[in-house]
Image 1 (tube, each protein chain N blue to C red):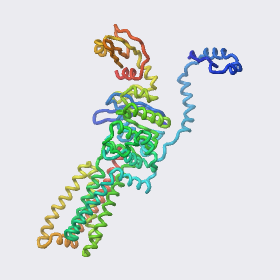
Image 2 (image 1 turned 45 degrees about the vertical axis):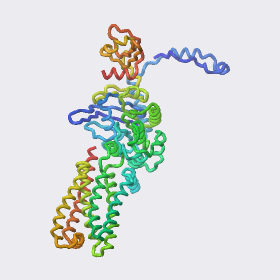
Image 3 (image 1 turned 135 degrees about the horizontal axis):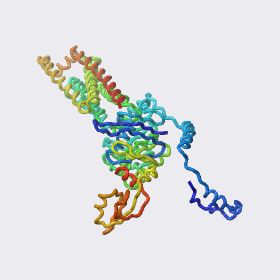
Image 4 (image 1 turned 30 degrees about the vertical axis):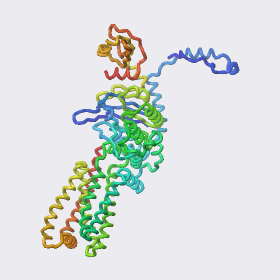
Length: 286
Length: 281
């Protein structure tokens, strides 16, 4: 390899500096004539071997994954608000409050009880909405993030459940105060059982078969339950003068309803855990 | 900080999307160049951990993906090829949401990225009201959240106008001084403008790799030939032509490879586009 295009040395120097340095021509000629063989494979390998420990010593280790703590979970939960939008939460609160107002104004506590008992559908709807496959890109970006999908899933679920639980507890307390014959714990269980049952079905179906199944399956189950329950109620309440008063009496006394609510609650919890395991499996496969 | 891929394979049903892909990329910008369907996006999706591998291994910074997935995810940024995002979100809300997934408590970086990519005026506009180029910049901003050391960009310059392109190129060059950046493109000029290393893919495999200069040297003989405009079609069928410039009755063709008999041309230095066409031949 020969250096053929060296620029004239000292061209940018002042005359005084050039005089001080003396003639550079012999140096230029020597540099121009110098030859060096291209490095052989052995030379390259030796150089790489010498550099490797230096490079390894300077390498910056990857940062540790973010620690999951209460602060991170709260940040994640707050971020869901940006994703879902405030309107969604206001709408769900509005539906319940409207029902309560209608119930209280129209026929006292009974209609309100009926309305609040329909609230599990609202929760199931919330879950189906929160876990809808928003877009493929969003799914990919969430998957590529250091937060695991399982954590994300439980944060969303906890938010939906807590929100509905808070609203319904408030309404059920008001109803229990207005109608002293109703026991609050009984009313809560009758509400919480179907809520968790339908939520579990919605979540499991969404994770297992997709968003459409997650929305349709709990709705179908609820419709089936209402259909069967209507027949049961019609037989039991045939002699009652007022249907809603009869419903209230049934809620106060029926152990079958209470046992069904308890069974739904247990089934819901099992399905929630199974959904988590399913997501964990999906993550491991990915 | 090195990204190492060894013998990677991926199938979609019986179709092999990638087979036997091995590469190594250090700090700086590496371009994945190839035609549509050559496996660029699949490779980036595997590197971004959003699709499972069928075979092979990947490591980054000395950590294997298989055993340190969350650690790798904490340090990567990814821009998918198609951005299908919820239309009712705004750029600011999207960035804040994704920043929370990356455990970035400080929202200052979100605002800095909105500013750096010229998105401040659009920050609170719904995503479904943004143009393709604006949406692309939002996608790039989310990929840059957390200053990722491994930045994977699938067609980052698609849909950008000249000014947007310059803005993005400047930002990527700045980021690449301390990170491994891989981007895909099927436009050789983009790779030539941005990348220090280029990997050429075809049918799910890497067919050439090296610096822009090294790949240009593989183009072989490149000539510019002046012919009658009427003969352009016939010449293009006989030769690999990388560029055609028509002027009234004449045309200047840039021909990659040896000239067919009867044509006289002037040798010109090859570009990456010439080399790319020669390799894809």
